[in-house]
Image 1: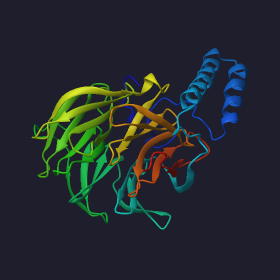
Image 2: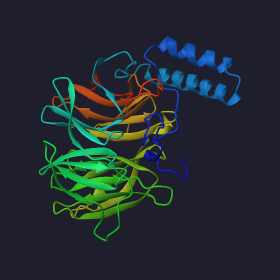
Image 3: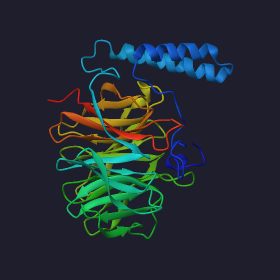
Image 4: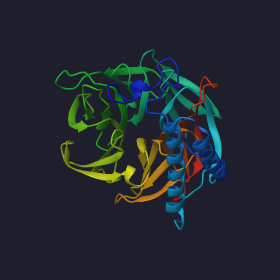
Amino acid sequence: MAGQSVRGQAAKVCPRKRKFASRQAYPRSLTATIRKCVMKAFLFISPSESRAYLRCFAALLLSIACGAGNPVAASAAEGIEATVAKDIGFPEGTIFVGKQIYFVDYLRSNVLRLVDGRSKVIWHRQGCGANGLVQTAGGLIVACFDSGTLVVISLDGKTVTEVDQDQNGQFFEAPNDLAAAKDGNVYFSASGNSGNPGKVFFLKPNRVAVEVETDLGFANGVGLSPDGATFYVADSATGRIVAFSIAPDGSLGSRRDFIRLRDTIPNAKPDSFKVDGHGNLFIALYDGGGLAIVSPDGKLISVLAVPADHHTNVAISPDGASLYVAAVDDNPAISFPGKIIQVSNPIAR
């Protein structure tokens, strides 16, 4: 990852060149996973590959141990309801607008809406690298990772305006994810690159962007607590979620590590996430096996296994009963290996 942005390792032409170092993800069958890890550990000639599969086996045993006795721990096969969208290049930015799912395809630079089980493109811009999406009073804002631009569009896909620099005239470096506050401000991450750290900005309703945090390894997913008092950002480089208090003027105050996911989930790389109405975080793990569900006080509730190699984002249904996970597989035989998987919310109330 050194010397390149994480998303820069994702395919600009081919979706199989990933933004994170590839890992062995848990497949659907638990016994198949155990057999695969153990067999390959001893069949591979390369010592490094053998060690990798032994680590996979150890991680699996750890997840089983952590899940034993946990009432909300789920296996990969439990709670899977349907694949609601497939043949996507690299899905991200999953949100609900009313009862409809909107999402982006980074590889094709599209914004899509799921209509009657089909993905309909509503907006496209070549070279954008559409990565994040959020609803505001003015429609939608698209974070263009590759072009360094935020584009405001209407719900039917008409471009309204765009912003590519902050109030000091500094251009954004890899805008990634966005979260809208109740006061009209929009917080967004800019992941940075090897020469620039990850940053956080907030975009005022007048479309002026203010830099509010600069000390992050790779700024990724962002979110807000239900009361609007706390801002969260995923630092994928360090495997943690960082929390900030929010000042009355929208700037960020005191900083703390909310949760260090790698302390309990081997190789965890948090991507985008959503916060439910009770303050729980549902964190897509690009590496780590699925979704990490974290309580408002920063405690890991469970890891919900989802059958895919990588997980980039999640949307929570309006009734809270279902989760819609943006996922992608490492499969050289498939040109567009992305999909959105509907799973049951194990902590729905």
